[in-house]
Length: 404
Length: 195
Image 1 (spheres, helix red, strand yellow):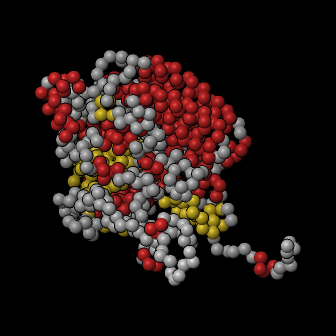
Image 2 (cartoon, chains in turn red, blue; image 1 turned 60 degrees about the horizontal axis):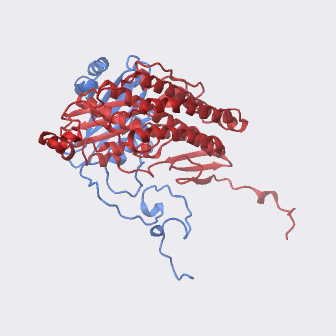
Image 3 (cartoon, helix red, strand yellow; image 1 turned 90 degrees about the horizontal axis):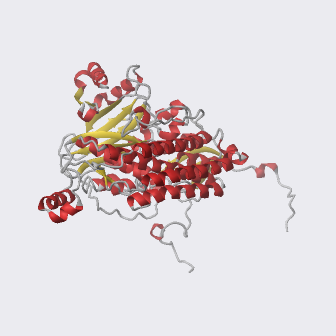
């Protein structure tokens, strides 16, 4: 063994002065999605960062140009895979704007109810995963338990837990089940109770708070310039929510608040999501009270909606209608349209270009995560390496949506 | 609602505003590429316009038209709550010469959007600080959202290369040892190997 107190010249002990390069991701256990960050570190401080996305690119927009308008729904499910119903409804609304179709009242309430359930699932996943990445595993399990309750309802309604493909042009695939309202009224208090328990564990935990507060802060002007929307923008104090600013469906008829933060740091983003989740619960209960029990959930328009299955088997007209809709697709009028809804992470926009045939000419999705992840670099440069994990987690980057 | 925006654009840029319409309630102005940047600066800085958010920027390929591509910008104003769609047309029939001014210094959020449009359609944004592919990898050949790019086209596997050989910035971190990465990315061993 060599002696520890080596008699070295001071000059030889000089540390290397060039920055250290570190490759974080694309597959890293503490990361919230498949993303690669190339870092230049000086000690533990980040001097430069290059965020590289695209690992989950599946050519969504290209694939949409190959099928019919209705065949986009399964793709839309897979964009934001923690709140697929919001994508389904967003795309359906965009096509309906192009077709100038208004869905029946019952369908509007139904879409709102399912959408808000999906939003609860989105926020639970984000906050739970963020806590887990910081080492708090128990709240994550509770949040996932609450999310299971949401998914049980969605499974009962749509037949699928995650990829529902439930939207249709001019309506929904099937009417609400008889037990929907009772299921929601039973599940919502249970979900909120679990959320509260998880919240107590986290928000009174010194370690958790210390790692979030004043970390990853962004000013309101910067957030707007970067094109941020959704909870991340609202955490800076800007109360822009598509549901309030430009109401669609029946959002102007229900009572809910838009929670905002003040500092735009990680803790604010966490708290805004928790508060929004409670507002979503309010909207769901209001939908349960106001959704009619009778009535159609699809428009009665042979250009877009499928005939009832019994008619398809019995009459030639309905068979032809069904065949034309499936094989050629609904003929969507020529034109271009931009339709926007409030997705789980912010403004979810669809820019559609139709050439009048049954196939889209261009389906452009405006995923909220893309812009938000674009701002990640400015949040982490100058901070510590370990702060990337909570900052990135609180942005809720969803690979499927961000990478198209 | 924002028809005043279209009128203001027409007053300011005259016949450089090629066309306007408000189909489906979306107010749209098509401008000449020469005033693309000026129009963006006007919309962002004018107190009556105040478009502070670049919501979306994308390109659309119309292979039958010349100019072939449309660059489509969607803007929103948080304070005025109005929206506008601004378009310009670039590119010849082969998709070459599709160049438009970058608006990154007008809205920071346009950075990744312009990179994506370049990646997907090959539209070059003049003055962009870091114009490289974003969703695809640097060695990818072609631009996938062009209508003449077959959807089922396969790309060749890329062997491991140094940046000097590739001629494009690859963003790879050296060193990669012989046991790292995918087998097709490994270099054939030079000289006699031991095992």
